[in-house]
Image (cartoon, rainbow over all chains, first blue to last red; front, side, top):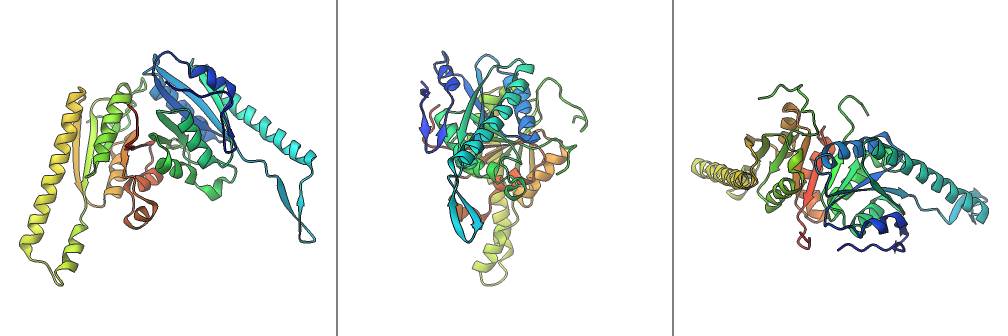
Length: 187
Length: 166
């Protein structure tokens, strides 16, 4: 059976304690992990997954909402006389706090979506490079299906252009479902 | 054939599975039938696309234009292979009790799959992934890679993992 302890730490990724409870689930159900971020696309992907996958298999389907925070950099390069300056701890904490706030916001919005569709979801937060962190988290969580939105996973949306979903499609151990924004929207 | 605009309401989607010459697409089909059966609206579409391209290799190999019979026999062989794949896929679907509609096309697989998905208003495209190395994928291209980027609908990529439990 699946075993994910509350103190799982994987090279910078931390799985929240809520997930640990769920893995003592009775049946060997079907676990769907949806990776979310701030973007509309990932929330659409979450809705799509709930409407089309969980709705039909409510009995044994388990949904996990995963959010990946970017690493909090420990050094900052300031262009001050060409020297690298170590960030003072105060500003690091501030940044870390801002990241956490952001995570909370994203996760709570995702959980709201789940609640409005009457689905119980577990949440997990990982830290690090989105591509790797999602892959690892999906593995640790023994996901049967990984769902991601197509673009905007990560802060530098334009630059990535969906490369995270592309990376996952090739490197994740489990099947990956990439949900595009609905036809009406243009990007 | 349903009207393109008709929405299949209750969470059932028009699903198309791309069948290629690798085992991975049959694995993808099985996986989908096992895990997503309630989501599939009847009939399930299976598409296989025969590429034009092998003939360029033949031309190069024979140092000149290859004999007509060779080309014909290659085409025949390809067609047989494609039909065999589709038959096997149909059997798998029958085993799970799912209605199937098959589509055979010729052309560049990745483009044709995306085109057909759009024409038939497919709501979920399922493909196997070759699990080739990065270098191979760069040179030989990857159908699943292309479709992930260019298909307008959600795409499910199922990788055949030898170490997978289940």
